[in-house]
Amino acid sequence: MGSEPHQLHTFFFPLMAQGHLLPAIDMARLFASRGVKVTIITTPLNAPLFSKTIDRDNQLGLDISVQLIPFPSEEAGLPQGCENISSITNFSEMAPRFFNALDLFQNPLQELLQNHSPDCLVADMFFPWATDIAAKFGIPRLIFHGTSFFSLCVLDSLKRYTPHENIKSETENFIVPGLPDQIELMRSQLPNHLKTPSDLGKLLERVRESEGNCYGVLVNSFYELEPAYADHYRKVIGRKAWNIGPVSLSNRDIAYKAQRGNIASIDEHACLSWLDSKKPNSVLYVSFGSVARFTDSQMLEIAMGLEDSGYPFIWVVRSKEEDEQRWMPEGFEERIKGKGLIIRDWAPQVLILDHPAVGGFVTHCGWNSTLESVSAGVPMITWPLFAEQFYNEKLVTQVLRIGVCVGAHEWSKFGGGGGGEKAAAVKREDIEKAVEQLMGGGEEAERMRNRAMELKEMARSAVEGGGSSYTDLTALIEELGLHPQPAV
Ligand code: UDP
Image 1 (cartoon, protein in one colour):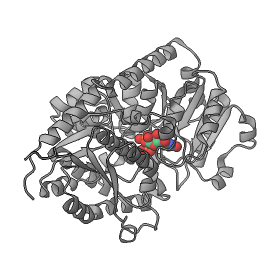
Image 2: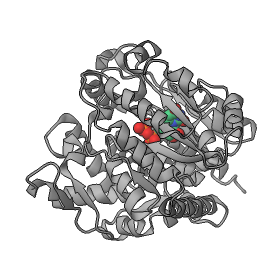
Image 3: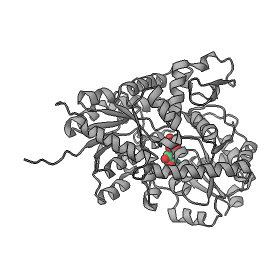
Image 4: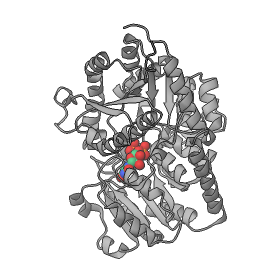
């Protein structure tokens, strides 16, 4: 008797934070586009962030479904409705509660695994216990960190050799040992949890352990972008990893790009026609991701720096409109009319970066933003703030040489805003100088632009049939298909 070939079924369980959720959804869709049955696990308020995209995919015949589990807000001491890191308003109080809440997803996830019997679980790094749970069901767990090979290698070196512990001052450079290039950092650029014991540090220790004993690592990157670090991660550190990115390139048409992640506060056509009216490579796109918040004094410096530099810009502003009067310079919006576009809250980022008028991206070096800039061939002004963003800056400016540093040297939780005021770390003159260096048409800027365009082509080839990321995903799916299924 012939039987239907088994359709591989994969669970995706992303962290509820745009920087992890969006690439995980793109990844899930990529798996589905290769014939894998996909189930995405999320909470009620996160599902609408991608439901239209999934509906469209399903209409095209992809097999993707969504299973909801409640967010344990009350147990975690979070207000109702706070189901995503981007809705955290008070970082020092709410962020620890949010991270504690993540452990409470163990039972509901087990129940779903019991009921659906998938063949594989792709779970975010922030669910370190997922490896053990997957093992209970006899299925492999893949981990997704949402960052580059480069930063995974830097972190490994920092944990292994602790070079920062022998440094006297916060601003002294030290070498990150054992890497393919000579990479230097300062203590002031390292996350707090690497320097002082904390609950987040403990959680990240568990993450590191689970990375070591899970089935393998999914990396949103492409081999040609960071070959020495992809090799180092696999061969020296010894992790099994698949590079399957840039996953944002799976959003091919305007509708997918415009609806990625949230409802944009600007109509995509209005945004595109504004960009259409500008010369190629003339516009700066300024955005600091989905979480970061600046102090009022820093917002004022950004406003003045952008105005003073005189290039057209799109600036995504995440502060509340009622707070703007505290920092927005008098008459700012009238003065910049036609030249500067402020988008409040959420911008269709991939759509904007892909427009030929955009010639530079002022970015906090969140990995998604960085890779989206690479994929669009746009050189960057790097302004890292927190997480692993200072490592990504080194990749962009020193290894790839497609970016100019704005001169940020101090790691600060989520950018330092949202409670407490202090002087702006980056002054308007620093911004103006970096903008001139990148947009002013000098020789080095031209070289950066050319290198960025070459990387864009490589990124696109990587995800096409036969490309490095395409091939890695094929290999992974084949391997998972062959993975023996012990009886539970
Ligand atoms: N993003 C967007 N519009 C916005 C802000 C962010 O589409 O207004 C997307 C962006 O394209 C990226 C993600 O949200 O895919 C942010 O991830 P990243 O790693 O850059 O930064 P994070 O938000 O995690 O700090």
